[in-house]
Length: 328
Image (tube, rainbow, N blue to C red; front, side, top):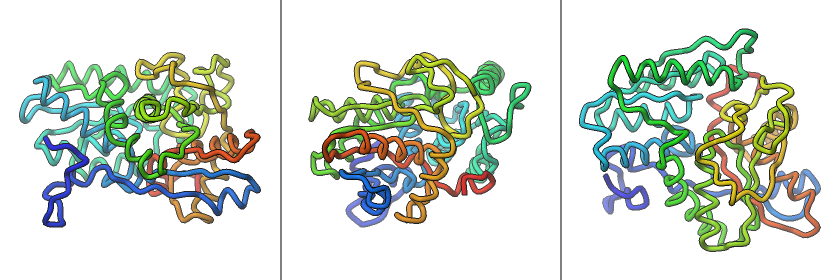
């Protein structure tokens, strides 16, 4: 499988959809920063412009590439993974291109658009009921545990390859090899801090490793829901926050390299939703909950700084995946 950084052909067109993964643009959010009366800059890498509309396209490709190389994924073998929708969409797309059936296991608490998109891409989607007391549109750690249990059962029943985004190194390497270096180059080497709302923590660890390699002083901040900020050591007061794609109340994440963490930033649902809407209205960036969390955290970091700094973040996925929710 070819290197994503060299996917595009000299003829000017791609020969596979996976050739189009990566190389996303970066936008400086001057209008939003001015609107908030802040100094400094926020730069946002528009990962929702990947073919599957999220940063997880990169992860899907990297996990399957590594599995093929080490022999754990054989031709025609079924792939299965739990997902909030983005990794599943990326896997459905990449599996289709590489000739692998794909089964996505997802909580019913996630937005319906994600399941429909995966099915449209050829995936078999198995929806798991939420834990007792669960709320649609709000996926808790208990919900995710039920999805994990069912995913393990599907692997046993089918003999599928488990593309485990929470443990496979490809989840980190996709961002360490490509996303991080792209971001550094696009920002002209001017990044003081990187903020990231974590799900698996693959993008935080991968991007930060890439940035620290070229600039050891770059600060890394993990973004969490204010009511479920367990990574910072805070108690969970409400696991049913509205920010889909992370904040699962998991105190330990195998892929989170805490040596890269300079601090933890907490965001509340209302601020995330307001920021996501402002991002669309002022900058034309139509993104999802986790992007709003990232930008809200970046703006908070600007507000706390004594000098004008440059904060980078990822626009994780598209707002098109949340039209059935109250995000917009």
